[in-house]
Image 1 (cartoon, rainbow, N blue to C red):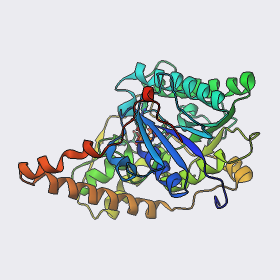
Image 2: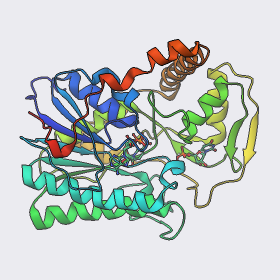
Image 3: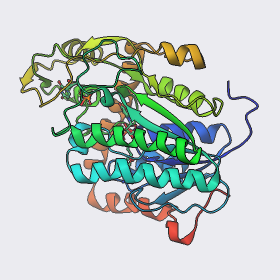
Length: 354
Ligand code: NAD
Ligand code: UDP
């Protein structure tokens, strides 16, 4: 679909995270020039290591809560910087709120300065514990503003507000994607999210931890499908702002996911029930009619296939880690020089999309 698209200068905030690093890979493969900005709160060097020596890729270790300076032209900004897992966004709730709000402000200021398009990675969490099903974009949501999830939910809602106000006031070229549960390679092993938790538990034959009675539902989108949606949205006409739901409508209960993962991993794990976290949404399923009608987008990767790819990823990762742990200390020291090959450029020194 992207054949014939000119080579662009693209900033990806949160580019060392799960979705961000997969996005950087994809954009580099298309020949674009990427500046990846990340403070490594939940992102890792490992995720971007394969790109570090690519001439079109530059990494800037920087916090989006601080103003962004990028020298040279910028055509596109994907704003993905924000922890996405409840475990991590609740670890520093005030920090999460500030990342959502100040991050949105700083990318919008950069977008206006550069006349760039800017895409906000919003979330299905803006619907909270939804009272309508499936969720359509016109639904305004049901969020507890003072609960433990609010730092993320309300932060993302505020970011959407800022995006649309920047459009009204400054004619900013905005795009808003409401991303539903996405999974795939490069999720963090200790991320706390359902797919990574269950796979790692299954591969280690450890108990699979189902919160509550497991009847709550989610709908899971494989990362490659999501990236296609994000890119179609970014490359749509300026009048097309969204918000668009991007997710896979294939709705499953948590209990069902536990059984599926256990079977696919060939695991002996037993199911262990744990308390349901506060404000955990009961049901979630995107309506993607709007994205399909306006952008021709729909997900293509079936859950079984996406899980297979993700299980293979974690199998290799765990095996590699085990092998590294059992290596003698001296050889570990030699192996440990990952930082020497990093290409890190502080913002102040002005790395740029050049
Ligand atoms: P992730 O935690 O793997 O990636 C987030 C990245 O942002 C990390 O690399 C982290 O270090 C970086 N980051 C966090 N705070 C930062 C800050 N203040 N300054 C600079 N970098 C910062 O999460 P992900 O799953 O890749 O999610 C990416 C984006 O998509 C997030 O904005 C998230 O809210 C959104 N989203 C994800 C999902 C999902 O299911 N994965 C669903 C809805 C929305
Ligand atoms: N969940 C679970 N066990 C886990 C992790 C998550 O039962 O080890 C449940 C969680 O309570 C929620 C669903 O799985 O109902 C999805 O959780 P996740 O944190 O992945 O995403 P979110 O709640 O943000 O959609």
